[in-house]
Amino acid sequence: MNEALRSKPIPRIIICSLALLLVTSACALGAAVSPALLNHLIIGPDEIPWDAVLCYLETGPDAASEFAKSTAKFEEDWAGPPTGKPGCLKSSHYNVIVALAIMNSPEEAADAAARQASSCQMIIPEITGDESVRSFTDRAWYSCNPNFCGSLIFTRGNAIGDVHVTHKDGIDPRTLFDLAVRLSRKIDAASAGRPFPVPVLPPSLDDTKQSLEEAWAAKGFTGSLGKQRTTIALQNGKALPKLLPAKQVAKRDYLVPLSHLACILGAKAKPSVSERKAMVTLAGNRVVFTKGESRVQVGKRIVRLSRPVEFKSGQVFVPLSFVEKAFGSRIAWGKRGSMLVGKLTPGIGA
Image 1 (cartoon, rainbow, N blue to C red):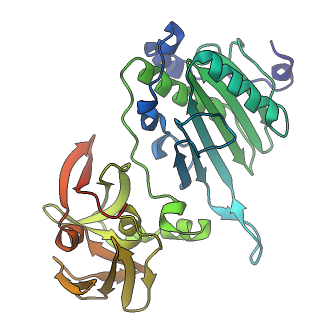
Image 2 (cartoon, helix red, strand yellow; image 1 turned 180 degrees about the horizontal axis):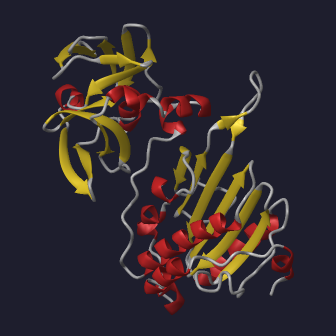
Image 3 (cartoon, rainbow, N blue to C red; image 1 turned 120 degrees about the vertical axis):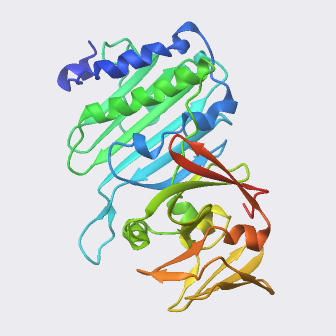
């Protein structure tokens, strides 16, 4: 066994996870992941080990710029609640960062992963072939400081995965390995031509233009929607679908937070909210909502909503049908499991 593992033993991965992994281990047979399936490899909110907000998701050649030379790659960063003394700069209690790149060949993937492991501030030792990683990796590099952080870089076929976890209360290595197994399973399934569904993600802090503190404070506002609150998803054209807290108010209409809806519709700045008015620019139009009114100003037009705008707990809630009435876009509804997903056609703004 690798010397690094003798000093820091790695707990065995749950047997059932490995059994499921073997069902789709096409990479071991030499199949390749198509770059077209990149979005199917993204880790979704239900796969993150702790309650977290999405800080950012970057895809394409500019994502994880130092990770690998590839046009098909992504990096996602999930963060826990901010901690720190009042008046001081606060940081997240924990973070989960997942990066992935699809290369032209397994050899190219291995070379890029080795460079990544050796370029870190603390060189990550290779553990390829160790029993703990043999079933879900081709090559692997691992490092963990149980008091704070851990990293696992691995290749599977022509894909590179990089999982990095920090936690101020300490790291259980199983958390790191379980995430890597999930990512490897997605790679195997995509290689076999049976990709996992593209995950439905919440709007990120980059999307909503919020700070970490604002995002965590906003997590509690869904209680303002009452006992009828639910979660739906909305896809703007070809963009990834995004989660929306919602309250059903008609057969196919929902009351949703303007902060979430605006970023899905491509707003470049977050809504400006005063005691009675909320303003945001959408698709080149200055849109003004007024508390308790069912009329909204869209550029020089007045559009009548299906119900009045509501201001609650510092948030603004508007009927989703606003996008159809104001921009003429149709919402085509479908289902992802038990979740309703609406697709805007044509897309708006973004």
